[in-house]
Length: 371
Image 1 (cartoon, rainbow, N blue to C red):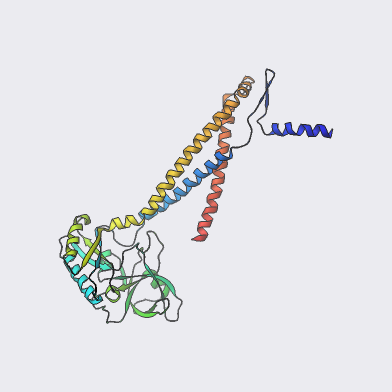
Image 2 (cartoon, rainbow, N blue to C red):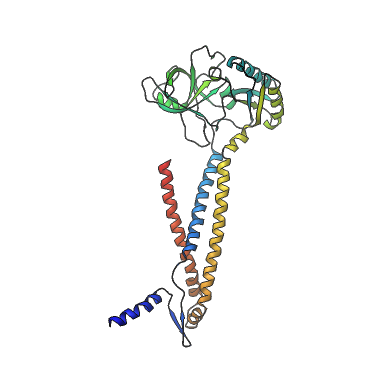
């Protein structure tokens, strides 16, 4: 008996892995194996994960495109300028840029003109800020000229803007954004308060103004502590960003602005005169490219999975032609046969979707932990 049982195990095991045996005119028609094609399931998983990731990137892109940067974009022009003459002192450089701004303000269609050490969404210097004997906060910094907040339409909530009297010989002053002021002085006004700037050798400065929050590093970022220095007190040469508010389309003033800056002379070099809107769009060009690549790969993987799924179903139906014929002869309806055939393909797809969904849940938790 034991030998008989052992000899029957192999045929029974092979039969359990099939859809059954069908007798037809003395022949035994063996059904199709029940094993699911792992390669096809992997294709479904890959296409599902890629499409979900692409959808996440699309949501981020839409959020960035519709986010309020906190400053005006339309009707603004920017340029990068550099004084290439060697030996120009910071004082002489400030005078050269002052003349350049005067030339720009005299152009038809120009309403205001100002300058800063950089533009939003450019690499920004990191520093530390703290009250006397208080905890330090990580901040970003930038140097701006008088009129910067008016040109960029950034609201001054308290105090004043920088003026021409904020010179290198005067006491250091700063303007804090709303987020930093609420962190350091949550229950009182920040105007007139002393703030220590620096991570190693901190230096005191007086807060003379508080402005509304605006995006500094990227669009849609949460509010981050930021400090503005007077351009005159922090200019030591290097590339300077010039911002112009126009009453006409900015593109029409590109060449006039370039010529006006070059006419200043003194070794003035001009780079990249463009509308500010192009700079903002360029800030999320990388995520737009990543979204298009992921979407393309996801759709390609989905097409390959669909073709493979169709091939598997067609192959299984071809192998089971006799079995299906016998079942229909014995009374099985078309709906039952169709449901069984399509159900095999759907089971593969559902397994792939379930595994892909589990991967996305784990990936989301991992990204959330790293954020």
